[in-house]
Length: 125
Image (cartoon, rainbow, N blue to C red; front, side, top):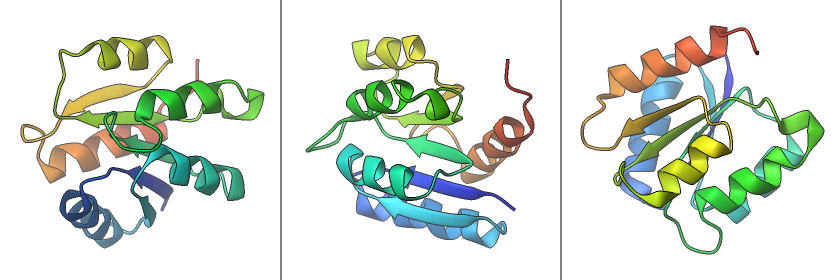
């Protein structure tokens, strides 16, 4: 399956999603903020990132700005998973070419897994 990176400061939600996606056969790395995510991506580029936007140390928008500045990471698939879908941070994420946006508490684990499958099989533009 795929190598996934999950970035979320909510440890319980992050670990639940990590275990669920591992159960689907994926290799999953889980980190708590954008700074840790950047280190993980630079160490080993994942097939897809699931990203929260509001985190300490480096938020999701900051992480996106940095990875999109690298030519080799400009097309890295990113799914945003946020609790605040109407925030300016979501518009910023859209402008930084995220693949999809899901809402925490509304999107089920199965819907997240389906979004992962869709994005992994999407042909880059």
